Length: 317
Image (cartoon, rainbow, N blue to C red; front, side, top):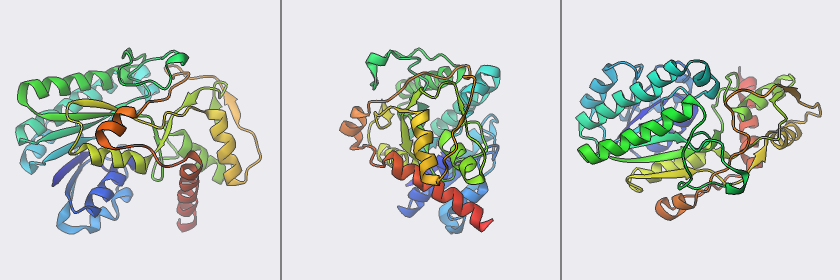
């Protein structure tokens, strides 16, 4: 199968690309390298004619033309402005990437005659601030996002539905929980697991924003990639939560990771950040029924993999 992955140099995208190539698919990656890293594609770039890389900003019409030329069977759309705080500070930038850029990708898939588009939505934002009694939330929960990032993710799923009705272009939308794993940037603002790993290994004090009692649903990148692969041929026209259904506080996360890294120092606390949810966890029961998917990686195993990966990078540098 021919698969085109936008954002394929990011940590989720590159992990997906490696899986697709291992299963003998032909893969094109589109990435502007604003946050992705070619180093993540080192193995993929040795795959010869099975792999092609295209450095393009999805906000440019060129991406539609490329997709139309390459004629992928499936388009996996991962490229995004993915920081909630940035979306609050600059909602126009967020919309230019997450709505206009995404529409360029969708138009390319339509013109190419692709059979399906897979979309990485956000289970942590599209549902807004749910009541604690509703957790873990399922896909039937009302969707009233409280950040521009969440609004853009919700809106694009509506575009996917419209294109399905207008042009019979199939889609599946995966509402991802807090994805973490090797290759996630430890120097960015998003990705608390990788940030903690980097600081713990560098002997720096970790910072927890707010009380640390806010909860997240942390799902490992390999589990997420498995959901995308399954959704290539299943779950047409549906939204699926991809998470563990388990709430973990940021304080609990830090304690676990500090212990794994052999660090006894407490974290520093800073003021809470605007736009972030207090509690979230996703019910992935629909994904189990329709995709045969469920998360299998424990938080202890997953965070250890991140720490080991980060440590290896420092050893080889």
